[in-house]
Length: 400
Image 1 (cartoon, rainbow, N blue to C red):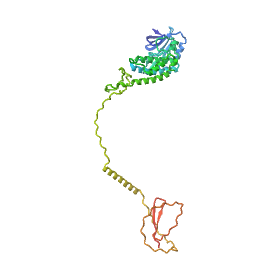
Image 2: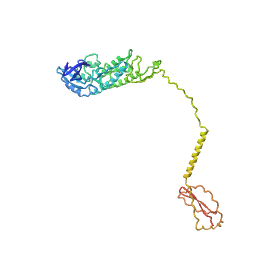
Image 3: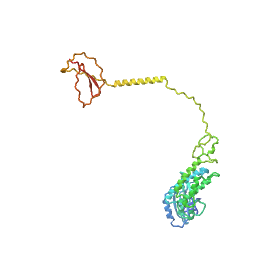
């Protein structure tokens, strides 16, 4: 079968009456979607959708009306299909992909593009491992009337045949999560409460009971995923009698059923609560050595050191201190006149020099100088004071 030069190959997921195939043209792989269409407004809607930049969706490379009266759209080839593992490993992978899908859908909704028929088969991974959403906006583009086919489509989409808003994609994404979680639960397991609440609200029958938009679902899914995965990584308390295992490297924790609880690339070291730890090698303890106190020799050494330090400081002070300056004043040329009342005092031998008294405080410059004193004994001594840093003693000769 050939549609406008594209050789049709294997079928791919598409909601009836829309059909999808893998195709080739001139040796290049593509994907093509076609449906009977008699609406002449199809080319205009196709051009409007092509102008919207949706990097998380395969780009539209060709499209229009075929010679057979089919409306067709050619897109880039789809990426690798998402293959999920079993048990909690597959649930963890799906929760991570669901967060990426919710973020991409929220950005597309801001541009006015909705999906309406989101399925697990419409999701793929590109070469970098990022999620890509196929057929984004195709329901509104082709304007087909959908029928009940067991797909995760919102009730209002099945009733009206076209997406009616963001809450239809909320319903589809919550339904996909519910399907993946229930298929991978261990035997007898139940859906964790955080995910059960998210699924119940996201896949509610009435649109008004769901999350307002995909961004609100994204926030709830992020919190629920964190809580659920953290609870699965916790080791239960009923393993206190478990035998001690030899630690030969990081291992993937196991659930009570023996299945892996986290993806294999994630290395997590767990410590089983209540299990006996590995015995540590016994090391003989050396007897504590008594602390040696300061003996007599140490006390004497400290005393001598302090004495030497004090002597050295005293010598430094004496060496640095300037020596006093002694000024010799010559005798006056004429003796002072004799007093009228007192007889002249006989000459006396000079008395021995007495030690200089302590330096008296300097008088302020404003105080009047005292009158010269007359002394009856010779030689007289006066204290010579200076405004500087020195003082001296002046010796006067005896009177004649």
